[in-house]
Image (cartoon, rainbow, N blue to C red; front, side, top):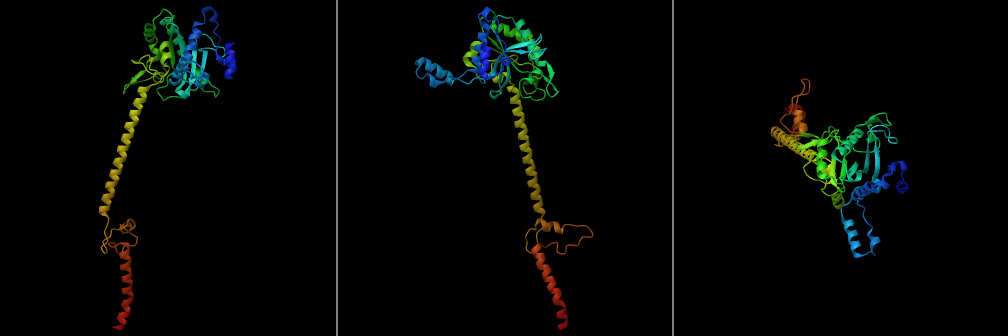
Length: 353
């Protein structure tokens, strides 16, 4: 009934709302309630302070603190629970061997295009959890033909995620939230689980101090208490293979590779700037050398224009010979005019003589 009500509220088909928690009546709904807590801790909805004006001061203060806290991920429509991830069969009729995500988050506007979430109340062993992660990996590796006839990972036929770059296209990340209710120590289980699943998550080291995770499953762990206190913006997430806690966005991403890329781009840009500066220096030197060779008019002392300089350069054997190669255009024009006048005046002087 809750799924149907949620479907009406969100305007979704009931089939997209996941499956009912059938064991709730037998177990006191412990796991479903923990899933709800995780959704609220990740979503971190903001209270409407205008509706609390008449409430006691302590309630208003708590609401104000929640309002001022860092925002969570997405909206309620970004969350789906009890989602089958079939390794065989179809979305509607999944076969055996697949996983079932407790929560699937799609909040690309907040940097989380797709995130699977698994909740553990500390009743399961590391071996049991490793078996679940094997199922996630089988699902992520499964390929099917899409509507265009091309083969793609099955999860890409349902959810959108950026393609990533060649050589670093990991599977969608998995967040494992430990809720310390059961008898098992989450720190011990997490360490054992990391060792058991290393083949799934371990990346390839590259020069520059980063790893690439092509075809790997990023696995991130946190505790429910820390998640509820700090939310996704808190540095309470530990990715398998990394020594320190990070925020959720950092943990599911690859900040060291991004930093290495940024350094590489900066170095490339610096080399480009140096190259352009060298080209400008060489061009300026060539211009200076060319100016030093530019002819000077023997008549007025001005330097030749480019057109005049080109005109006095050696031409083809049948081209007209330049008559005044040491004069600029103006001086040449004056010299030619004077020569013509002299030629015209010559016969007249001869007749008078």
